[in-house]
Amino acid sequence: MAKAKFLGGGSLASELQEYAEIYDRLKSLVDDDKVICPESEFHNLETIEPDLAGPAQRGLTTLSYGLCFRSHFEIGRLQAYRAAREFLNLAPEGTPQWEDAFDDDPNEPVVNRTFQWGTGRAIPTIPWQIDSSPPRPNKYMSDRRAAGGKFIWADLPERIKQEKDRLVQYMYGDHIDQYSTGEAGLLWETWRSLDAPPEKLADFLKSDHLRNLPFIDIHCTLCAAMDCEKGRQPRESDALDTLIMAVVLPYCDVVATSSDMKGLFTQTGLAGRYPARLYSAKKQGLQDLANFLVALKYAVASK
Image (cartoon, rainbow, N blue to C red; front, side):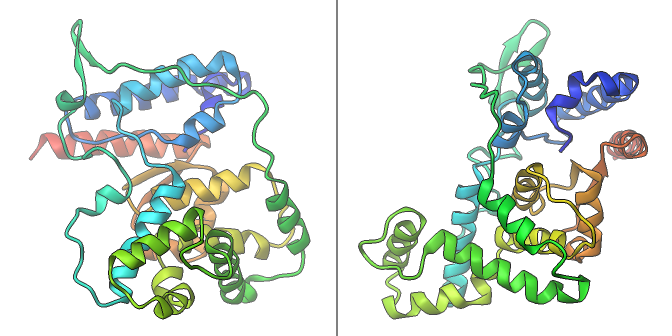
């Protein structure tokens, strides 16, 4: 997604009209219940300039109308629960897939989430609490630097496997039992609620059912790919960018992101597994997105 700091970036002042046009077109489609434009925890995290927090939140709220992605921890957790049922050859729970990503039904009309305010719709909001010191992913950066220059594209499959092993170990540890806490404890409780044999849980942690769930697949594939790009210098923002993509790609038709994430989406084969349209914040990307929204509006109107 285009970072909220773009909204007031002096260096991008010449492009502000293009952002305004995109906003107006999105707003029209959202108000007509033709598209949804959810917000997420990352909009808040990436708005690190306090004087931009208010305008950024107001702009997002008028597009999302309160529809917000769950946290990345919750989404990964709920995807894992679905994967556990599949691993155990149990029937699907029957809940819609959108519940893995949202608290509220994204298909419901805007009027159900809002109240009348003048001639439009609105929702009550609580101002973001902004921390002017952005998160510093020290371990992430040390891992990226340690991998720098050691891998090439031919190493990508093995590097993805290593990243998945590391993430699963980070989430669940080396052993899960009734004394486990955090994500491991929650998975243990779910496993027991399914009356699954405790000894099979270790097999699930090693399985492709878990490692190929969208959150783990996307995050680890992008992290691995960045290690295989020759000459790439790691950035702290990469840590959030990979998480953003892991959260939104399975549930969105259109994603506005950085140009390097857009490139990796194609290079890694993720584009073949997650059929989303990606647009960068570069001038051509903005124009392509604006054109797509025009075409979408006409396509919807003709139905």
